[in-house]
Length: 78
Image 1 (cartoon, rainbow, N blue to C red):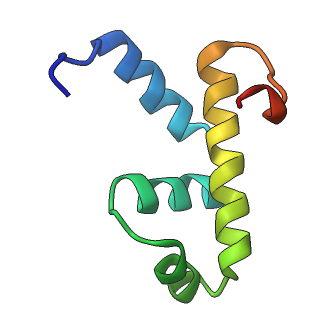
Image 2: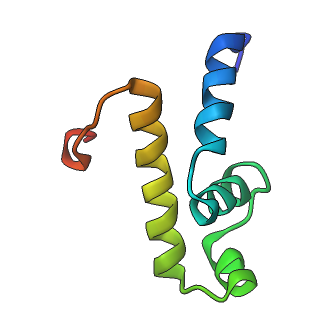
């Protein structure tokens, strides 16, 4: 990444992450910031890999909705 991140956008992202439900927030942070895999998170939390994948996807959708300010349907992302 060659550009410096926009401080206002970073602040909005941090606020959006804080507003995620606890489980989604913990899984999102474990994947994005701690660089853990789905399997490792599943073992540590007692969840299945499918549950970890679902919670991560829900966290991403919630972040997108909070940052864009409008609800989007998942099929419009592709």
